[in-house]
Length: 149
Image (cartoon, rainbow, N blue to C red):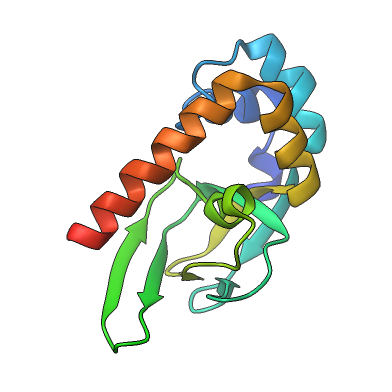
């Protein structure tokens, strides 16, 4: 059985990133030159916390393989729980708002994520209005969806 890391090729990354909301508008050439060189890879086991609510943001995550779950805990005691599936981006909300993490995300299964660090993500958004616009819409829709479910 081959490991996930053996499956990751530039073509896989280009195909994957091209389907992530907020990055679909980029041409493959842009993804290859702007995004691929900046990506890291992180793996997590079931139950492992990927990001913790109220922590300082260090990276944005693209869920490549596996499934994760999120939890937003509100001071008044209410919780909002949600699933994150392959192809979804998470962790970007804190980077755009410069606030601490709004949710705790943990692995449900073995998870492989592509990551981009805070500074790089902010530079990409500053220099590409299509990504900025798409990510802003994604954040707005996600907040409405999670707070009304």
